[in-house]
Amino acid sequence: SSVKQAVLILVPELVALHQEIPWVLLSRLGKGKFPCDRKREKCKFQHILQVIFNLKQRPLLKISSYARMDRKQIFHDPFFWQHFQKQVQNKYWKCDFSNNLLLDSLTRDSKLYKDDTVFTKRRQNIITWLDNESQWETIILGACAESASQRLGPHSQILKNLHILEAFTDFTEHLNCFYSVASTMSIQGQVVQPVSQYSSQVHDIDKLDPAMLVGYSERFEDNIATSLWDLCVDRHVRVNPHHQGHNVWHSLDEDESSRNIRIEALREMVCDKVSRRMQKNLNGVICKDMWNVDIVFFQGLPQGWMDKADDIMKLMKLKGVSMIT
Image 1 (tube, rainbow, N blue to C red):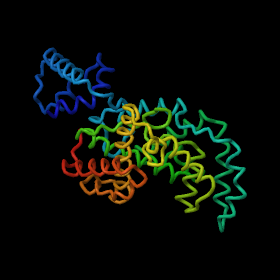
Image 2 (image 1 turned 180 degrees about the vertical axis):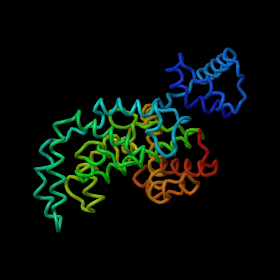
Image 3 (image 1 turned 120 degrees about the vertical axis):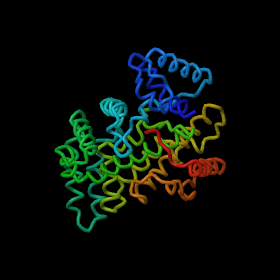
Image 4 (image 1 turned 90 degrees about the vertical axis):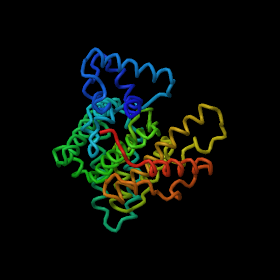
């Protein structure tokens, strides 16, 4: 039933909040079928939980209630925002690049530019933030909150002055699209559980490292493939199994644990590529066309897993684009 599907996604969060069961939310998910009486509703809720546990479902996404997610702004979801704040403050964005990296490659990379004024400013000014991690986290969290309100506030202005706002905005826009697609996939039985850096369960969180934002700015804002960009993209692929260049796709291990990792990573990969199409080609609009990702973007996967990715997208297109709202 639709109620069961919804609770399958929400159950980790509801269990954690068992003292504050959202009766109204459950009633809405049940399309009014739940009784209004609180005691009877609690029994119904407990019965559903028991059914789910008896099914021995695999671990589910723990970071956010898709039922409460704003389709356009993931940071409006209080559960995701709380988790995101915690992971940022736990420094799960940190890539541990050498502090000398930006200056060591400055001269070499500057030769790639006709006018290296902005490039040099960006490199030199960001260095100040490398030794001020707590302040950097304040800037990032503040800019995320401002992006959710669609305003250029003081934190976003700092990123603009550092010439990395465009790369940061791409991150927040992609995150919004990613979790919108993840919601659709999950309600259709393809639960997306981001693996992510340090098991943070925040998709692409490593892109918030200041050096990463510089590298991505040089590649996509300046349109220059600097040596810093090469290091950034290499590291991102190396630590995130939702990219087909990750070792998990080229390992000879065929045990159950390795297979389970690949299953989760493939769902995140599909969600990542579909949400990129939604963001870049469809103006952020959720529609059936978003599933029409050319299979060429999955090249590098073993053929069997490419076929599985294609099957997921075909199935999602067939089932539609419904979300829990």
